[in-house]
Image (spheres, rainbow over the protein chains, first blue to last red):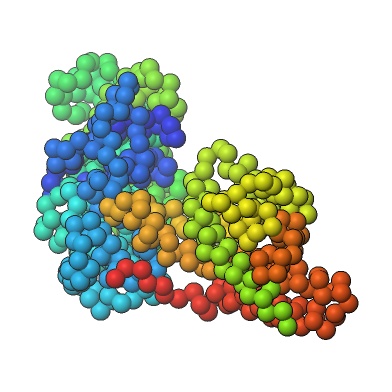
Length: 374
Length: 217
């Protein structure tokens, strides 16, 4: 298991806590500059945190408190495979020689090294590329060679830094399959840095959302999308219907409108508590005619991208805007056009409520753009 | 033709390369990783480029006077001009190698670390094969510059035949004794050798020669 609990203030603030189990694929997601790659670099020892603990397979790789650094293994002694975003293949070595380099530590015999390297090439389905130089390989081929090189030293943890970002979609699909099959075989913790939420939810068992160097929430993709811990997480995972209101014994109000929704009261939130609440796309239905529990709304924005249209409704008698996505066929069926009227229904069962509490840390106020947050 | 002086120049140039290149690689490696003193170190090492050779030669003469190196006097000896030549050639050897080090993508160095290579292994198997052009260029420049060095060698070594009288000093001697034919022949020979050295250096840097250099077997 990989256990990470680090904090640092410079060159960028980081406060990350996560655990990754053997065989687990754990994605780190967040906007650019949020500290995802820095987290991987700290694990690999390419950067040093101020304090914290990095433990892999029960061995301390790094341990420091504010007083002193107790353990800090050099990068070469941390058994990790690191897949760089730009591959970082050694340009003077062919594919086979690149893969043989990490084997140098445990296999002094060069013939044995090259034989083992060839096995990795075979495993990744690129045997025929063994004598090619990196500059003679396509992006996808370079990535496979880089993956083989990262795996060749049989690491205790695999760190993947945006490995699919520079690769075309068909090649990416192939690499997803390769990663899935390798993952089953290896049974080691795998950390994947990506800014692509779809990719993260497709591949990962769990996702940690990072923003401004702070790990905000770790959860399975399903939980993360349905129950984000706070409005910032909701924003980062692409939930674009985030509302404010007051919760009181099962009655949930919608700020800026007179509407109140009846939701299940689990007794966890005190009466009169200010809350933020979200609802996923699947919890929103749009009708062309008035129905029980529907809210009348006007279409204020309509933009089509291919077969998908993005619509913004303004709820009548309020300043609340609801975002909705639908297929072109659906838009046609509902006769939706700019300025037209529609009736929106919220499935109260899919509403997720997040109590709002004041935050004392001034940096958090800035990051959420609000004086309140979870 | 004064072959003695030609051979002496070649001997001096080859010895300078042999000693200068390892020193240049070490200095360049340290410079790339130097901290806040980097600018001052670079400025100090580049001084021989801007100081007049006679000024350098004068300081060497002052510094070497009365000193010996393993029992060999430093003034008016081959050892003395070799040491002076090493110092004069510092910028010619270090700068191309330093540029070659700096051209290595930092991620390549990090990849070497995460591949489990020790700093020495990373240098031997990754960085050294990647800076070979810088080393060749440094060798060619050092060679050509040593062949043509006049002021420093004359100040430190004088013109002792077979010991310190290099080709460029021999040319000066010929001109002084009004032997323009001899001076012309020697000059032409030096010109040819220098041209070949520089052309080889440029050829190495041609994009057509940017193909494979193997290091791992």
